Structure formats: C-alpha cells, structure tokens
Amino acid sequence: MNYMEDLRSKNFEEIVEIGNKFGLAPFKARELYRSIHGKGKESLSEITTLQLGERSKLAKQFEIETPKPLQIKKGNRTIKAAFELKDGKIVEAVLMEYEEERKTVCVSSQAGCPIGCLFCATGRGGFRRNLTPGEIVSQVYFFAKMHQITNLVFMGMGEPFLNYNNVLSAAKNLNNDLGLNIAARKIVLSTIGIPAGINRLAREPGQYRLAWSLVSPFDRDRRQLVPYRSLPSIPNVVEAIGDYQAKTNRRITIEYVVLRGINDRMKDIKEIIAISRHLDCHINLIPYNETIPGKFENGNIEKMYSELRNVHLKVTVRQSLGGDVQGACGQLSAKLCGTESRPPRR
Ligand code: SAH
Ligand code: SF4
Image 1 (tube, protein in one colour):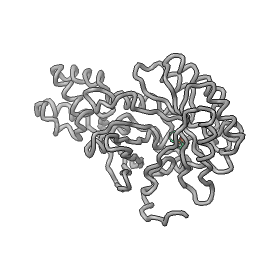
Image 2 (cartoon, protein in one colour):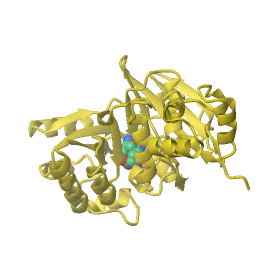
Image 3 (cartoon, protein in one colour):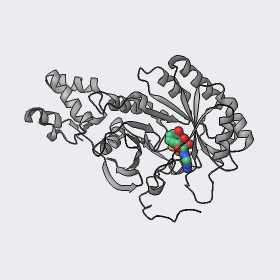
Image 4 (cartoon, helix red, strand yellow):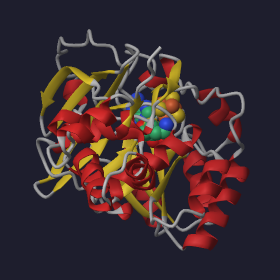
C-alpha cells in the first residue's frame, strides 16, 4: 500500500530534512514549513512558492492531512467544531472569545480518554486512540482561518500527558514564529496529574503552562471519581509539581470542578488549603457543566471562593463558555446528535 506521510505532523527540523532529501533550497524548505504551519495550506498544490516539479515529487510521499469539519455549532462567544479524522474517528475543539482581543482554542489531544472521570462526557465515552501532531494542530488551523488565535488550552478531549510526544510536537509547531506564533506562556497543558509528563515538561525550554485537575483533595474520593487504574496519588503529583517549580519557577493552576456534596464540603476546602500550601498556585474553580442529567450537581462555588480567599489564596471562578453548544469543560463527547437545545435549568 502506498503510505502517505502527513506534513502537518512534521516539525521544522523534519521539514528541513525533507527539503534536503528532495533537493529544495533552504529558503524553500522554510517556505514549505510556513505554508503548512503558518498559512494552514491544505494541499501541496496550493504551495506555489514551490515549482510544479518539486510539488509533484513531494506529493508522491507526502500529503497535508486536513480533518473534515463535520458539524460546526455557533454559540454565545463560542464555536464548537467536530472533525472527522482519516480513520473515521471524531474529535471536537472549541473556539472561545473571552474578550475581543483574546481568542482561545480548546483542543483535544486524544480521541476519547482512558482516564474515565465519572463527571466528564469524554471520559464516559471510553478511549479510542492518541491524536497525531497533525491532527492536533489541524483543530487550531481550522479556527485560525476565522480569527487570530492568541491562546491555546489542552482542555478538550483526552489526557495530554498520556500523549506527551505528539502534544509537545504540536505545541512547538503552534509556537514557532513561522507557524501561528502563539506564545508558549499562552499555551496551557491541563492534566489529571501524570508525574512522568510533569517531569518532562519541566525540562522543556518553552515556558508552557501547567494546570492540574485536582478533582478531590482526598485520594479515596479522587479515586472514586477518577477510576483510572494507574492514577498517581496526590502526594506523588504534589512532589512532581514541586520539582517542576524548583526547575522552572512557574506558578501552576489547580483546576477544581465543584460538585455539590462531593467535593465542596468544609473538610474538602481545608484539605485544598493544606495542599496548596506546598505549591505556588492559583486555584481556578470550575462550575460543573451537566453531562449526565441528575447524576452530579454544581456545588457551592461562592462558599469555596470566599473560604479560599479568606486565607489569601489566589482564586478565580472559570467563566464557563460553550454550555449552549455542549462545548463547555467536560461536555465534549464527539456525539453529533446533540443538536437539539434544552430549556435552561431553573
Ligand atoms: N484531561 C485533562 C484535560 C481535559 S479536561 C484534565 O482532566 O485535566 C479539562 C477540565 O475540565 C478538567 O479540569 C476537568 O476536571 C474539567 N471537567 C471535566 N468534566 C467537567 C464537567 N462536567 N464540568 C466542569 N468541568 C469539567
Ligand atoms: Fe479525561 Fe480530563 Fe475528562 Fe478526566 S476530565 S476523563 S482526564 S478528559
């Protein structure tokens, strides 16, 4: 079978190497990279800085894989897109407009997620496979055709640190100044807490930001809500983050989805305070977005906010966008049927 390689999965050095192999002048290899990662070209035939002969030689071995947008839903300051990958799998990404000047894309790193958090639609749908670097950047290139993208969050489907190499390769292409040139500081990797990934991120030269989804400050409760067999314990994650901060001096975000009666009790708050004392962190409380009707309820955000503030922690409440298109945190499920809208809950 004639196996075609995806140019969107290649980094700068790899494109230069391909250029050498195919006898392209160095400036042409740069142009090729810029066309793929900066301009989002979708086929070699569109890259007219290369001669016809050069393009057709490359086209025998390479293609520019462009996942097909299957469904696009526009909401209030959000656009959710579902893409069909080459093998028919579906992933979703969301563009969020927090402010006029800030356009954030929430990308998926895996088709499905093996962690299986009970409150998350992605987790409940099971795991399909890791995304390639090209499949990750493609989600951003789709939205970059509409707006200049300033921020990126790996908070869509999947656990980025279980697909570390492909996620970092995508992040580097998105950060490259011949690519979309998104500042590393504006790229957030959100993890359930995988120490191996945290250790590796600490050694990356780019200043990518780290967010940890704590879920519950008690290991027992956390394991019930996050039934991943090899889920690391909270002390192990805290230790990895401590090492990361010793190396990078970077503040992290603790993300905390607030579930009524489950992780918003006074004893949870006290334990969150104890954990955060070990770290340089900012706590971002996330209102629960409904995934399974009746199973969980949004918790007491106001109480948590004021209790954490009272002890001088840095706390914010996430402005949840995307609920109107089933595209808010935890709602991405790659199910295309959800086109009907439900009346708002009272
Ligand atoms: N797998 C990674 C990144 C994707 S999830 C992680 O878990 O960090 C991004 C965030 O959405 C996490 O903080 C997660 O706790 C939160 N989340 C998941 N389901 C949610 C829901 N139903 N409502 C609100 N936040 C949710
Ligand atoms: Fe996976 Fe994150 Fe959803 Fe948990 S919250 S199932 S880790 S995507």
